[in-house]
Image (cartoon, rainbow, N blue to C red; front, side, top):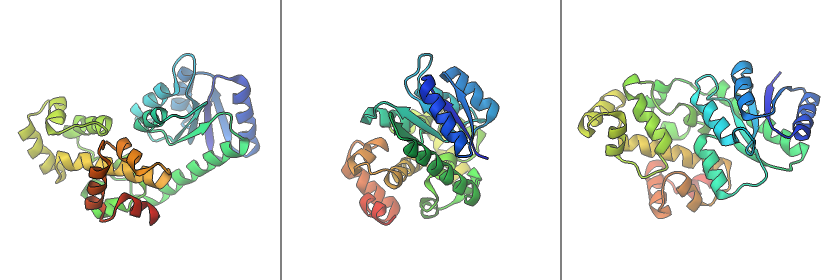
Length: 263
């Protein structure tokens, strides 16, 4: 039986969701605020979290950020509930690792469809994808490009203690105009030393890791949304859509639009 955690401060909405989940055979938990929801997620390990964005104690973004920082809860899929979704909302949520959005008010059918779709994708991922970060690090770019996108997002970086700060910084800032010097300064290494260290440990450069992370985000958006290419570029760390298209073509052998059309 799949478990779903509902974090929602509106009592009526929360109860409706709990009842329909129970009717459909889910084991449902609930929390009336973000603080309680985080504690519940760590205690119950739900298969999926549905979280409202606007709550009195802490908003949904803070909840998601907290869950993603904990190894115990980092991989739990999360769907946001919100009264409206602007481009800024979408960008912020995806930057933190949100899996989907539901706009309130939504129908029960839409609610259940979003949950079952996300759980199915996560289940397929767990059943078919090799989970070793080091194995992923040793794959060629063409091999990596064919992996399910959710797997890429969860396990792109190799497990290397010396480079933990490096990869954490790239993950947090890959949408920004970062370079080798920025990463080296954050990690506490000189650029020259970091270049040699990353090359010896992973066989790749800092620039390559930044590009790979951006390309993973681009593929994720191209596959799971209908977002225009210009906005895909922006959400993936490229202010120049033309440069993004050339970079994507160089990395994948086809344009972003052609890649999406082949799906």
